[in-house]
Image 1 (tube, helix red, strand yellow):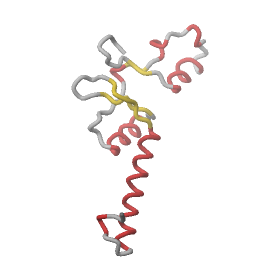
Image 2: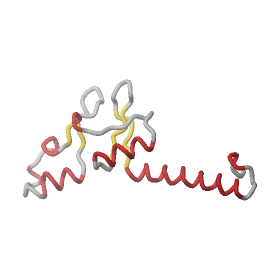
Image 3: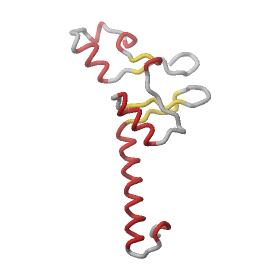
Image 4: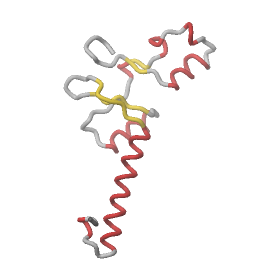
Amino acid sequence: FNTKGNITGIVSERDYVNKIALLGRKSSETKVKEISTKASNLVTASPKDSVDACMYKMLSKDVRHLPLLEDESGKVVGMLSIKDLVKAAVAEKEKTIKILSDFALGKGGHFGSE
């Protein structure tokens, strides 16, 4: 982060493996800024983005984490992982299954069972 709280880069295990281990460098002799993915190359998300939009970003860019940035300030407000998105997608599918099941059983359809 810079002095304004904006993200300047990120280091992942993939950065470590690709830029230290595979190149035969020593981590004790390498600075984080040498291996980090710089902010200009980061794929990020906004709190306004949908789960599907975030999944698309991750899949299309082959990343497993998205820094969550405020729209106005660009400050980091969180970090999304692929696991977070999968959990949200599964919960949504389970809700849809419950609604359809209730409808099929005559329990009120789109209102769900309460």
